[in-house]
Image 1 (cartoon, rainbow, N blue to C red):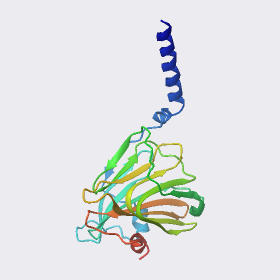
Image 2 (cartoon, one colour):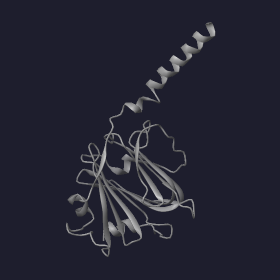
Image 3 (tube, rainbow, N blue to C red):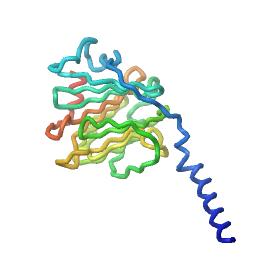
Image 4 (cartoon, one colour):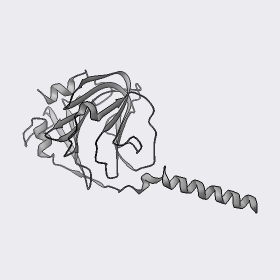
Length: 231
């Protein structure tokens, strides 16, 4: 009997600790995503594209779809030059911090999973997961990017720009919370996929641009996304 009571008390203690710490993320507000065939006008303006573009297969940039959410801003997806896969997402509408200090990058392979629902984008071999709960209001952004030839291309108050032959990466808005965005190479030919990540601050809006290879055979040179955006 004493052993049973001792085991019961241990179980209750562990359950209480779980509620306080590791299980607390389950209380986050759930979000829902849907698909739209429209690109937000500000995304087109950022890419210097007109409203009627991107709908023909022979266009240099071909629009695929936009994910819309209740709490998260839209995420739009494009194919570029039939070689690249571009994702564009406005992370925040009132970001007043210089990116030179606000983007905290590390280059490790130590991504710790905490239970939370994700929606998966698996159009390419660089699989992307977006957390399907209400995102936090960012003050700092924690990027962990792991892979060969990883480099910081440019970093100042308005841009933070990275290249990697990426094995995996994660983006957190709080180091103690689950990953908001996670990407991982699923290539059968090699363990990595070329990837460029750009955080861009424009008029107090914080944008995230991800440029990955459309397939295993496509290569990306450092600076490809910058040439596309600032052409």
